[in-house]
Length: 333
Image 1 (cartoon, rainbow, N blue to C red):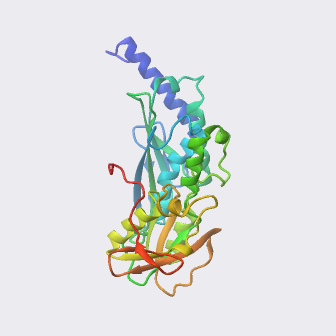
Image 2: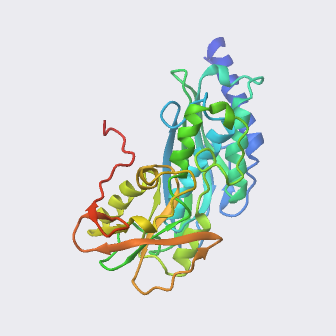
Image 3: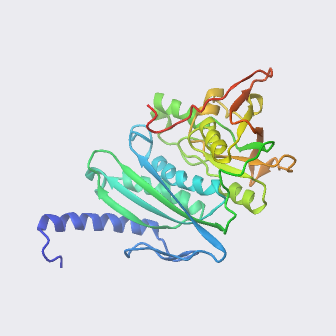
């Protein structure tokens, strides 16, 4: 009984309870690994591995800012929602422990006959299963607008005092990136022009914008093998995220244009400034024996750290020019 609650409030609550049960049934967050108690109580219960510390990250996914339903399938939206948080953990060499999802949905997307939520969960939970991340809880609400708002919280662990940081790069360190750059920006441009062409895109590794791959295994290997001195994921664009790393480390950088691993179909500008590649950008001491691949992902040296707090792009002919941070930044106008 819901004493003192109006009939309309009871109906609304029943609707939310039904929605949570749909998500709970799909999540199937059985107690395993660090998860001791999942969806169903007021709080989840997690056990942090002995000798480790907890890392927490959170990311918004906002309709008409991070995706559009006319461009992105619900599977893509769900995948990208989780990928944003997983990439933050990858940048610190962390192992994921659990995910928490808060969703504000327009009422028309919550009906049992509407398949958008099911598609969203398909994308999110498939990526979660790939990396062994249980969906341990969250919240639901009716969106005050016609737009979807999602917030993903990721909890991870790393050995105490050893997680990778943005600070730690020193002059003469080498600069590396994983994978290829600019692919997400290039694909987004195509999606905007011909969205129907991508309606059936799948998470097969060939869609860097719609279904980005996160570099958790690489980040964990960098930490475990002590290869990196500083690290960040490329979410806002190489130029902007390099600026963040340099700022935290109190250094500058020189990037060799010819060394950049530009994604097939992308331009140099997209490789430099395009966001949402979710590759890792990291530094290592000069002379470090860096493998060509880590966890099957290509590793490319693209430049070096310098003392002077400026970023420079060196063209193939040796000409130097300032490298400005022109990636994504909220509230920048």
